[in-house]
Image (cartoon, rainbow, N blue to C red; front, side):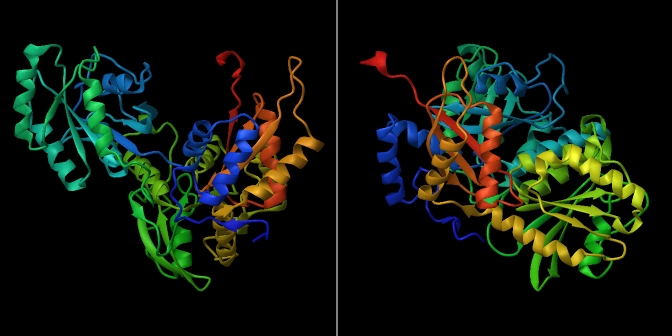
Length: 492
């Protein structure tokens, strides 16, 4: 690891990212000199430093008004709302804020018991949303009362053990509140009478939601406590060789391998000895395109893949070198990057490559994967075991980059050099400047830059590229946010 970098101190929880008290005090002085007050600085660091926000899942049977409630919570009409059941099938995530606290809201399809095909997959998707959430809003139609399906959802929620806020929806006036009281019988505590359509009672319900959500995100990935063997997700499109690779590194047949794509349905967690260390590998079902149109087990499997990625620390993305890099491959890589995990690209079936295909593959990589040049690359053959041992150094490199933190002093010396040698282009007679910055968090590394004006996307990419050249960060996405200094002249 570069001597200019250091691992993050995960024990620091000050409400200002991972900066220690002394470093934060110095940083506040620097900010004050440039016209930023403490509230602005803490707000910017809080947003960047915490990484994943607490997650609230909104669940219930079909057509009880979940998407309408989600729109009410997030304050805009984004979730699809239609007066017929089953419109929402995919698990959809939005950011929301209430009483100054930010969190994520997951809108789910309606949950039903004893269903088949796509409806069963929707029910499975709702269960995964609950599994990944910090708290749950359970929506019941107060005008109908508790049904057998509602009772089944209650059993699911009790098994999950997550805090639950019971929302008695469609209570449009005082006369409907009597209907809501009958929902005490569900045994989930006080029903909160709400009209998601008109907004009645939603504020009181959100106050209860904030009590149920943790102040800060869990020190876990997808509910898996940190510590113990490092957790790796093997992801890729169907039949790319994920199960074969797992069997090869395990040294035995632990997973069914079949020529038929999509044999693997559920992730199989395996403790593997590799490179003198123990790792936890998750073999996942292949991700298919247009997931929402895929019925039954394949849809279920794609959701399991997403759940495995949420639990992982590093994603090993397998790519079949015998076929052209597809939109599907790119979507899976994007999914891994956006999840904030460390990333390794493993080009599988290398033993089958001839010179002509190798030439075109390298051109495809140069053209299509330019945005992930920072990800370590390993050419492997899961069938023969070729270069499988090289996976461990690549994974360790990616994890080291993922956990790296640049001290604020070194970062600002570097930013000063950038501003002097490559200033932002002049736009509209103005030239915005990076004034100072800090790294607010790790896993992945998250930076906050304070600037005198808006920084264009191209300049942000330039700053990211220079950060990587200077400090490494191999194998990890970088998250860079910019806080622009407000004009205060007229306030006085």
